[in-house]
Structure formats: structure tokens, C-alpha cells
Image (cartoon, rainbow, N blue to C red; front, side, top):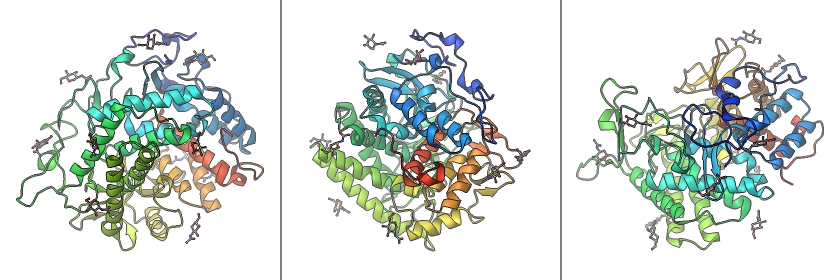
Length: 504
Ligand SMILES: *[C@@H]1O[C@H](CO)[C@@H](O)[C@H](O)[C@H]1NC(C)=O
Ligand SMILES: *[C@@H]1O[C@H](CO)[C@@H](O)[C@H](O)[C@H]1NC(C)=O
Ligand SMILES: *[C@@H]1O[C@H](CO)[C@@H](O)[C@H](O)[C@H]1NC(C)=O
Ligand SMILES: *[C@@H]1O[C@H](CO)[C@@H](O)[C@H](O)[C@H]1NC(C)=O
Ligand SMILES: *[C@@H]1O[C@H](CO)[C@@H](O)[C@H](O)[C@H]1NC(C)=O
Ligand SMILES: *[C@@H]1O[C@H](CO)[C@@H](O)[C@H](O)[C@H]1NC(C)=O
Ligand SMILES: *[C@@H]1O[C@H](CO)[C@@H](O)[C@H](O)[C@H]1NC(C)=O
Ligand SMILES: *[C@@H]1O[C@H](CO)[C@@H](O)[C@H](O)[C@H]1NC(C)=O
Ligand SMILES: *[C@@H]1O[C@H](CO)[C@@H](O)[C@H](O)[C@H]1NC(C)=O
Ligand SMILES: *[C@@H]1O[C@H](CO)[C@@H](O)[C@H](O)[C@H]1NC(C)=O
């Protein structure tokens, strides 16, 4: 078993580490104070990795990437950021792993629960190492297996409790306590059951990324196939209009608070705003976990188009479930067409639509976002609709774009509108080939870690205060982006122009 940190919930398992759990500091606290020696650049960023004995997973392949990168990055502050962020997920979030059981539980950071979305985003920077590090590959496979169990039982839910094998206690979710959700869920398995389309995309992306990196199809067991069947069923259900031809209410899922609870009641019996049929798939909540304004979230549908095709590819490559593969390709092409037919407004993508002509022009920092469409693989960064959309998003025309003295960018209603998120700047870097723009965004992020050398959720433009000291996804996404630059634009971050490919 791989385990390190003292947990805020009861840890019922023995630790095989030199330091006992009691001596390993809680990383939420640890990450709020500068720890090791500062880097030699002007930002003097501290070393923030936990003590080796407290790390939740060790990988020599990961350590090699860190030394390869830090020895070549020309700015010692950026090198320090890479050193802190690249291993953060393995250092701090692998709460449980047993290779024999093929089960692993991975947390988002400061909350002891596994989000399907966060997990999918916490791991991509390691995929190129899977063929050279079998234990790391076994970890990813065990994560997929654990998620297959979640998704096959609760395909509408977004975040989950520890598996029974782990002996870890479930975490009480204060926010979910007064929520009524249909179909009902067991709170010993489900941490939060918000219907977020991209959570299912994240599970598909994790699965196919593992396959692409290893050619190992052994994760495609009965439970995984059951999860995939559930995903296709939910895609069908959530593409239906709110009312059928006879004005029957079509509601496969609804989520609402009780009177006086927080969050409060959701209108229309927990169904939100009505939607009309377009081919797009609706979602009740956004990737930020906030309620959708309109159900059809363009970027999540774009991610779905891509991931359904990859799903079909891996099924075809392994000769499994031809009927599922065919249906996946069929949905993918219907949704793709619907994106181009129903989400454009004056030549740019709307963030959300409802099929009646309602459109919300904005972007939210969380991936999938409109800004991240090239990162998601939906279109090229020089696609003319993307270029036009991006121009609007990075301007006053986007209600969630703000500019401060030290920090600027795109945020969302999850934190206040004057709190842009570093994550959106990472997406913006993926979305451009302009060197000046890339460096500006890179240094906007680097300059604004509150001297802590980790990537935070959001930063207040008025006073520089930040949210979420320990947010593994943001750290991973930043490191993934630096590795992308290392191969795509090496001269920008290295002192020479030789590209770097980890694991080669
Ligand atoms: C992993 O699980 C198996 C089966 O439950 C168990 O026998 C074994 O002791 C576990 N390994 C560790 C390291 O906990
Ligand atoms: C990682 O390696 C350190 C020694 O460097 C060890 O103390 C620790 O137990 C290892 N962690 C895990 C999860 O195996
Ligand atoms: C599960 O729900 C019950 C009933 O509302 C509540 O008493 C309990 O604390 C909840 N447990 C968790 C882990 O959320
Ligand atoms: C809520 O969803 C359930 C299915 O999970 C459905 O039976 C019920 O009619 C829905 N209720 C409303 C008010 O939409
Ligand atoms: C997977 O198989 C393909 C086709 O045989 C091959 O080109 C590729 O190198 C293999 N990848 C790995 C990681 O083994
Ligand atoms: C595909 O075929 C299998 C076997 O006949 C069946 O169990 C499964 O439900 C089908 N899936 C879909 C999505 O049609
Ligand atoms: C999807 O499948 C349906 C039913 O088989 C078929 O009528 C339709 O043409 C297909 N659409 C696409 C875009 O493949
Ligand atoms: C966009 O970029 C791709 C390669 O990245 C290139 O092949 C294509 O010609 C470019 N298109 C335009 C319109 O510049
Ligand atoms: C980052 O900080 C440095 C030094 O404090 C400053 O020169 C630079 O303009 C800042 N960059 C951005 C993008 O804010
Ligand atoms: C901007 O950065 C400077 C230098 O670190 C700091 O003194 C100032 O308080 C910051 N202002 C805001 C609004 O964050």
C-alpha cells in the first residue's frame, strides 16, 4: 500500500513509512508557509515538496524528469516551480494504492475526496513515463479500476469517497447534507452527486491515455465496460429536451436543496433552465461545480466529441464491443455538428446555450473551458473561430475577465468575479503560438504564488490573496504546460533550442 499523509479523517491503516502519520504535517497547512531554501531568482521561491518519508508515491522516472528539467530551465524560479508542481500529485494525493487489489484512491488536494475531473487532470504529465515505470502504470490502472466501479454505479456523480478496501473513513460533505438528488445516492460511496458532463469525459480520457501510453488493455474488465455502457446511456438521457411531444417532463436526474439549505433550491424541481433538443448533451453543473446557467456547455460537449472518438478507437484497436464503438462515433459526430450549428454567436463560441436561442457569452476558468479548446484537442490554436472567440474572452466583453495591478485573467462565479485563476492562463498558453503572450502569461502565474511556489486556485486582484493552498490539479496542469513548452518552444524556457521529451 502507498500512503503517507496524516489524514483529516480517521486513517485505519498502518503506514509502511519511516515517519509515522502523526509526524507528517498536513499538507494544507504545510503549503501555506514557505518551507525549504528559496530559489536563486528574483522571486526566491521556496522548495515545497514534502519530506521523502511523507511522500505518497515514489518514482525514479519522475525524479529523472525533475532533474532533467531543472538542469535545463534557464530561470531558477521557473525551475523551482516545476520542481514543486510536477510531482505534487504523487507526493501528496495518493491516499491508497494496492496493486494486488488493483484499487487506488486519489484526492484533489485539500479535500479528502476523489473527483473524476480532478483525477483526470492531475495525471497527464506522467503518461509519457508509464512505459518505463511499471509501478506508475499499475497505479494509473488501479485508479481507472476504482473509477469504473464509481461510474458504473453512479454515472451522474462527480466526486467520491474512499473505496472500502482502503479502510479510510468517508468524509462528511457539509454542502451535500441537505441536497436531494435523484437518482438517490449512498453518501458512503458518493461525496457529491453533481451532474457534470466533463467528469465522464475525464474518465474516458484517463482510460484511453493509459492505453495509448502502454498498449495494455487489461483495464477493460466487466466493470469498465459497464461504466462505458452507463456513459452512453447518460449521454442519450441528457440530450433529450425538457418536455417530450406530449408535454411530459423528461427528467432522468434532478438535484435541489431543501428550503433554507445552502446551496438553495434549484428551479423547476431541481432541473434548472429548460432545454430544447439540438444534439448537444446537457449538464446541470459546470466544471467549477457551480450550477449551469444554460444546460448545453459548449466546451464539455467539445471534449465529449474528442473522447467518444478515442473511446471508439481503443475499442476497435482491441476488437471489443463494436456496437458501443459505433454508437460512440455516431454520438460524436452528431454532437460535433450541433456545436457548429447551435453554439455560434456572431462568429464566436458561446459558453452555454439552451437550444431555444439563449446563449451566454463568457468563459469560466475551469477546464474544459472555451479557452482550452486547443488543449482538449477539439481544434487548432489557429482556427479562425477559436482566434475570434479567444479575443473576446481575453477582453472586457467576457464578464469574468478582469485586470489588476499584479494579476489578470479569467475567473468564474465559483470564487468572486475579481479572482482570476492561474489555470485559465495555462489554457491560454496552450492556445497560442505567440512567444510574447506565452511569456507574459507564464510570468503572471510565476509572479503571483504569494511567494509559496505552488499554483493556487484563484488570486484576488485587489489584495493579492489566494484561494486553495493545496490544489493538485492546478499544480499538475502548470507542470504539464511547461513540458509542452519544453518540446514545442524550447528556446523560450531553456538556454538552447533542443526540445525535451520526458521518458525518452
Ligand atoms: C493488498 O491487498 C491484498 C488483498 O487484499 C492483501 O493481501 C495485501 O496485504 C495488500 N497489500 C498491502 C501492501 O497492503
Ligand atoms: C518514498 O521513499 C521514502 C524514502 O526516500 C520512504 O521513506 C517512503 O516510505 C516512500 N514512500 C512510499 C509511499 O513508498
Ligand atoms: C450521510 O447521510 C446521513 C443522513 O443524512 C448523515 O447522518 C451522515 O452524516 C452522512 N455521512 C456522510 C459521510 O456524509
Ligand atoms: C427527478 O428524477 C427522477 C429520476 O431520477 C424522476 O423520477 C422524477 O420524476 C424527477 N422529478 C422531477 C421533479 O423532475
Ligand atoms: C503500441 O502499439 C503500437 C502499434 O503496434 C506501436 O506503434 C506503439 O509503439 C506501441 N506503444 C507502446 C507504448 O508500446
Ligand atoms: C452492446 O452489445 C452488448 C452485447 O450484446 C450489450 O450487452 C450492450 O448493452 C450493447 N451496448 C450498447 C451501447 O448498445
Ligand atoms: C446515427 O445513427 C442513426 C441511427 O442509426 C442514423 O440515423 C444517423 O444517420 C447516424 N448519424 C450520424 C451522424 O452518424
Ligand atoms: C494552422 O496550424 C497548422 C499546424 O499547426 C497548419 O498546418 C495550418 O496551415 C495552420 N492554418 C492556418 C490557417 O494558419
Ligand atoms: C513579473 O515580475 C517581474 C519582476 O518583479 C517584472 O519585471 C515583470 O514585469 C512581471 N511580469 C508580469 C507578467 O507581471
Ligand atoms: C502587487 O505586488 C507588490 C509587490 O509584491 C505588492 O507590494 C502589492 O501589495 C501587490 N498588490 C496587489 C494588489 O496584490
